[in-house]
Image 1 (cartoon, one colour):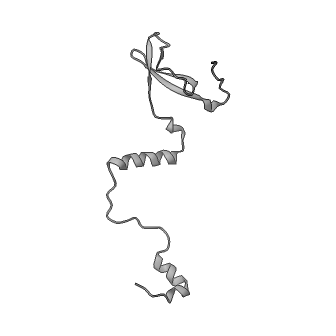
Image 2 (cartoon, rainbow, N blue to C red; image 1 turned 180 degrees about the vertical axis):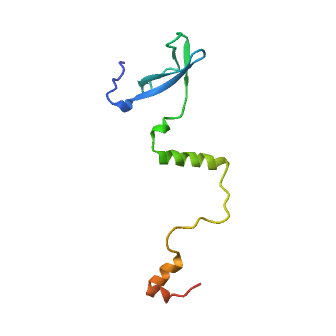
Image 3 (tube, one colour; image 1 turned 60 degrees about the vertical axis):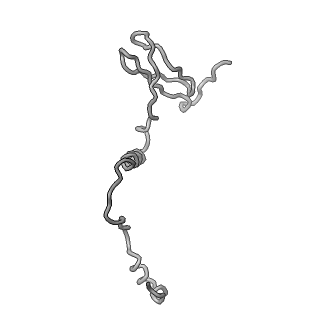
Length: 107
């Protein structure tokens, strides 16, 4: 069966391989076609595939910060003395602005 030709940029993935003598090298291949080992371009010995996280650095900085904060709080949760205060008017101020709500019984 012939290989499917990649027509979109999203069909190509970057795979990382490590040679014991020359370090890491990248290989651009269609998704799902990466072998377990390739030939090192410098010496010709077998370079084994290294499994890494997807390229999260290309994402949004806000999302990256959220992921980092979530990972950090998994092992070291923040210790707080009170719940966080919500910005804006308090609940009592909203009641005072509406005269119909002022007639309701209060706890």
